[in-house]
Picture (cartoon, rainbow, N blue to C red):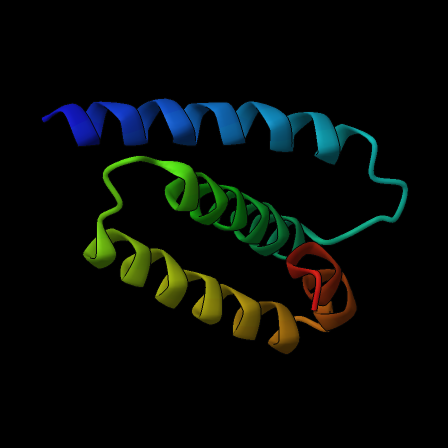
Length: 90
């Protein structure tokens, strides 16, 4: 139960950070594109937080990584692959 509570705290922290980033975005995106970019940022932040947690859960990391890949592919399909690569630093 402790890990799930900590995960909820991490997700809330990442969501707050991403809301600040989204408010500074100058380019205009469709609602679908914004959805996928926000999801990608959120998942990238969650993955970063999972890496620093003392009790790493390999299953949770695998789930986040799969979500990241699927969302990255969604970004590619929506024509925002450059932005997705920038978020992931690849």
